[in-house]
Image (cartoon, rainbow, N blue to C red):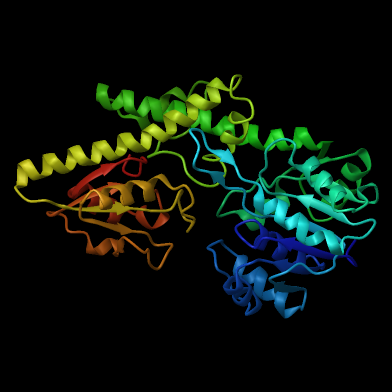
Length: 406
């Protein structure tokens, strides 16, 4: 397979690491993205996202002449689709939008040849992989001569370059031949196990994995609200409960963010509304937790004003959807900061993983004024976890929504 050309479509948080990894494994890789700036950045040996070691992989790939980025797909042997699958927001319950996948398939249709591999890695509603086959059939492409399968990514931001190789993978093809051939392709560079199934099962598996975590986090977030009313330290409570050999409660926070856990459950809910009541309720709880945090901050702001007779600056520690990344997608911290800003509050933020944000002024953590600022901890970035910083925060007017001070 090393003599085959691989085309990775979509050079975002999954596509670019995948392209860079495969290029460093000896494959000739064509990266495709519609964004001209992203293409130019990559072709200079630079990266446009924060991910440990990714810059080294991209630089080495270009030095070896194994990776080149373009705005349109080029004729290849393996096509890996890693485009976004956002949600249609203008619905009572958000519906998945697979338009980017459809466009990617239409764009490669004229250059596909017999024997090619078409792999979908984008998180997708059940049935999307078979939809790829149907689209190609309508475009007069003989899919009987193709290998088409779904193989969802299972990586953690901040550890992508390691987990792309070490984590187990699931491959579900539209037929047995596709499953077998594409599984063998992944076995060439994945050290974890590669499990074979059908396309619909693989698609559902990805959605279930993240829905499971969403449900667990919903329990933690619900507990945090109950414990706030009962004046109980929720992080101590969860630590003690997890001493039970069969209990593993996750950590509460200001909500749930990112393009996986905050999004994937809707792919199940919208297609199976009647039978997904627990999954839907977990989504509602985690969305409501963000609103609860906003109300809590407003109340703390009012208490500060009543006590000190002036309006404090609200300093949000963290804007990303989780610790130690620059990804703002579906971030509850960002939603909180933006909502308070739009409501007229004086909002600044400490976000060490981005240089600037359009509507919120970024400051260094050393610029916090202990006496005059109300500090809200929304993300547990490593830059905040030091004795010096924590001791300073404990002396200020600080409220902790993610257990940093615990």
